[in-house]
Image (tube, chains in turn purple, brown):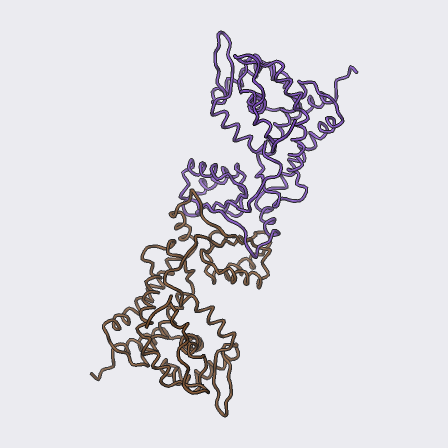
Length: 310
Length: 310
């Protein structure tokens, strides 16, 4: 068969549809793929790797230059060449951004909510909006004009944000639990009012529609060449993350039945696992750093998506 | 000294200032004074007792007739006369209304709040207002347009009210506790925003100003005749209750320092105890029911205001 394999065609089409920005794609490649192998490669290796993802050498050099300026990456000159690796800040940022991507499929819930009551009189409208915007990024839903709620908030992140905004004395943070006579029915209504689950569901359905053909092809047993496997994995994470950014990751008890987000995560994990061997071959085949070939995968890699055996 | 004693003059002036309504004064007399002695007296006795409180025989007969219609009182004909006593409903209502009056001075708080989140889409504006009004009577403060809060709510009363209003599925009831990074400072601000403590404080200051002269006179050792003692006690409870009705009874941690409500309750208890002997003499001196003189005080009487020894 001389025709291009179907998965390769799918990868080309997805690249054209998604058109990821160079900087964010390079961050994904570093965090997801290079990170578990130590986090550092020669610039030439990176350029080669990104070429398969549609980035020219010039585009990679420009993006890397900016990522160094933004403290994501650092260069280490060795002779006349340089290796490029994630900075400590870069690691931290990637962890924060991707923790939600690699989260387990079923998120445990202890039944507690974090509530943030905004004291009406102590903040201007602008400052209130600033707070609501910041906490919306952390998945907080707006229950009322001055009340934000989250069933699975990250307490440390919340405290850090309130501290940075200097708003600790302008809100009351509470841990809450619904009690009799309230039933699950009212809670689901609360969720429906406080988060745009319809919009989020549409986002996930789009992701599912785009990557369903990839999953089907893989299930049918089509072998992927390493370059295509790597390309599909990066594009999938990029697309999944775009939707996930707006997802408060509510516990299953509070979500509609057959929630698109759960199906999307399930599919993402399945494709990720099926692409593993190919994508790893791509990484281990050509990449190196100053010490030689990349070190083997860090064990934490296998805890992604709640853990998977290969 | 032939001049009228000062306490008697004070009682006359307070009666003129307060002008209690006949029905509510008779309920107070029954619940506070006759109740601990079995709850039933001859109508003639009641008429005599109320005369000292400025009510004519006709006014008492009219009020009692209405109180029977409203199921507060019931008449028991014995020969050609009748005794009048609290009905079971009347007892229950009095207990509910006066529980807060006889509450201990320091209200214990476990740090938990009851929150009632009103689901915005499921209730009309009228129904929402109805709910807010009902829960305001139970002391709930309005934290936001659709959020009511109470640090010491009566869970049973709340559940009963939501059931009666058929609003169980239109709200989410939560038990909440403030957590880091929130401090007491923000909580006090929340309280200031959610309850009209200034208005309440003014009410208590008025009560304090009206009854301070009585307390001073009693402390100076002026003896009271039984009729005046009884009159002062009924007027004081009537006045105290009027302010207390609007009091959410917040725990001390959440109140301003030297809170007028605490001073008022302290004064009320002090005067109540000082008037005890005189007021009891008035009750035991002339009152009777079908079995003869009234039975002695029920022990629960001495647990009022957190308990007092005589």
